[in-house]
Image (cartoon, rainbow, N blue to C red; front, top):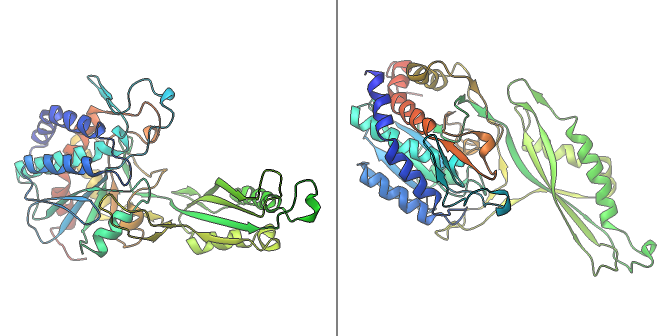
Length: 404
């Protein structure tokens, strides 16, 4: 296939991709409230001639092209975070804006652009017969911002879909990404005894106990494991809670949340034990646990999971890494192969289930969750073109073999 034809096809679809993205931005699809966004994606898929489109019980939209025995998936989470302080925005985050080069609005980079490029990439594959004998699955997945990977736990466990590999379409700054640190949400609880604030010696102040623990947690961050590729594990106290009979009383309980980022070589068990081993945690008999996520999806489905999101890395010489790099290079020159700073649905797809993942998506990481979020039209085109070329290059890389 002449690669120039793929590039020109992607460029010709830019007006439609732009309108599609701007429509999605305007629909305000925060986590657990994505139904309007899902319906708009379903409509676009049907209009473009997807062979089958389904909305599953959790509310994920699944669009299929082709009928091959092996599935190649392109995943885009389609929920967004909120907008924060509107005073930090110079434009309406949902009306957005458009120039010759850019599209602005909440979700433009993180990561509504990804579903747009994936949908049109699949359309180009069908137009030019580039499915290479595979079934192409494009997923618009929900609740990632709340609980990354939960959507794919549902897809794999309940829908029994197990792709050959998955392209994660989160923003990659124009690069190919092959891994990320994992994460977990940890809670530490201590108890005390309340008393009147005029005689604090009569009680046992839980906040004072927690202050000692926080100091040791902060110091622990400096001692965490470092991986050559993914970098250092980190932790940060992100929330603090307390109970007290009044502002004139000693606190009788205190708790903190810890955002823990796990690098390669760390596990959720080792991360919990590091905190449990802290002297102040032992001295004050603190309880160290993981949070559980059980928020209903917009369909009303509750699918509980521990807030543990495993690390994953695809080898640099893996077939899918090599195929993605080759597809990209054939169209736009050799890419940089790197990693995400933040977390993606790959925590379940590869981290829990061992299904290989590779990353390429429009937009930039630094735009995620920031005011004045935007993406670039050239990225939408580039990603759609590379996605369209990928199945052929993967087929060539593996010699057409589909066995594990």
